[in-house]
Length: 232
Image (cartoon, rainbow, N blue to C red; front, top):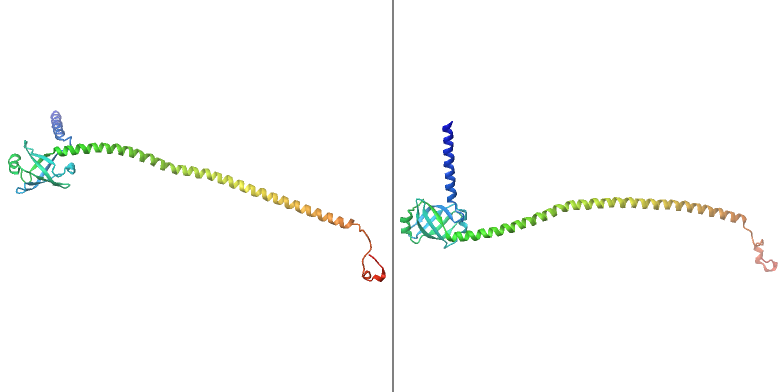
């Protein structure tokens, strides 16, 4: 059991040292990367480097790139960027022959790279990222505010619909009540009309029964003969 504890302690210590070593090799400025030589052209003094360095996109043509072999970190050479893609970097090595001897590289060699121009570009990019992050934060807050307002419109529409539904029902009740009142008024007016009509007929009948004639002379057919001297 004691041996197992000692072994675990040694492993933990080894992992801690390895982790600290890896952390120490990290480039905080984003301009230190590694790559492997995929092709060399000694006549043109060109070297094509295969790398998965994400910040390679910030390298521009004619940027300076310093490279060295991990075995000889103090022996370094300088090159200029001739071109790049997402995975490859083409370097122009002005002192090609001297650098081959100094850095000891060939096709397939694993090298370290560093660029002062890349460091400056990365610095500017970081500043831009900070500005964009602040703008994004403000825009996200604005978007969230508008989204909340849009979400609230559904509730507002429902509230308006409910309010006007109540008003509609109330108006419909009042409308039906008014129609009912009018119907009652019509029935009452019709009843009163019939009563008045009956009374009027009754009065006309009594007038006919009690009417007194002004004279009792009737005009007959003989009144047409003036010789009879009968006057109406």
